[in-house]
Image (cartoon, rainbow, N blue to C red; front, side):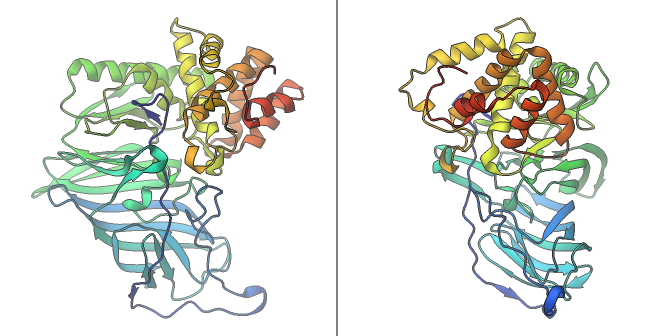
Length: 476
């Protein structure tokens, strides 16, 4: 993600979970037994070091099927989310993350389930315990007015999540706003495939992740279907509702390209953004390995007071008139952040530092400053006593996890690594990183280990001074 107001600064934050009980009667509680076969509740959070209450334990999601209807005039969302998951323990009950929208019915494997709902958690007790390793399906029927998360101190008072527009909605959810519009295991470590069936007034259109499966109009409404068949972190899921102008085609190398534009954008702007997106997608495919997904593109809206872009999977989301550097940054995330996701939010430099470096690489590729020159400019911009250096970007802390240092110093780290080990080794590291962790997760420790394996060098001191020390590096 990138912020237009503060260079390379992401407008996102977290909201603490709370649970106030509101009971809806349904079937009896799941049985529990003693000994090795005992059924126990899944944890209400995954213990992320920055967002310990986000996500849930006891299961892994495989697929989300979202069948929803939205009325822009009433700002009302309703429908059913059907989640296919696998129990990772003998599970007596489990949580789903869901904020402000009210569940009216829950079933597990087709049978009614008992549930309670609080500020952030939907607690589900199935009719019978779910054995470890067993796949199960939970369907949640729910509705209400989606919440825009406003005034977060972590993001300097900015808003994120479900954003209301004049003709629909703009949805950017990093790190934890997915639960404002669908029930989920809302943490990047639990990736899943997605399918969407979204019904809107017939004068509106829907853009989403993945591949367009068609639309059907009946009476006053139209239903749009999309499908993302590669695993995706929950915060990367999006739907955009509005009076879109769609632009479809292929990149020069043949990758399908689907973009949606607010009608306020001129034909010249649309052509520029599509052409730039297509060129960059193809070049990153040559540089870092094949494009990880089945289509590329952009979602470009005109939204007052939204100053961020987000690397929503397959086609980034832009809330402002987007430039080449931002497009390069967000498309870099398709490899670094989307295909390879962070295991926990402490690892965020693996997303933002990488995308910052890669955007500088596009500048180099198109005849501008090299990544080394960009690195030197940034390095010289901040004197040793500047607060910029007083942060360990490998553990940046929750309140400053999207600071300028995480982006810029993260990018400098990779530029310095390239300079130290040479192009052949460096780009081998970058390609191997994607190949080894494609559609999975990565950590700083794993990246350091890979760098040392490829270069046959001890890089302990290098990464210590760049990622961990709270001081300006003077040698490496």
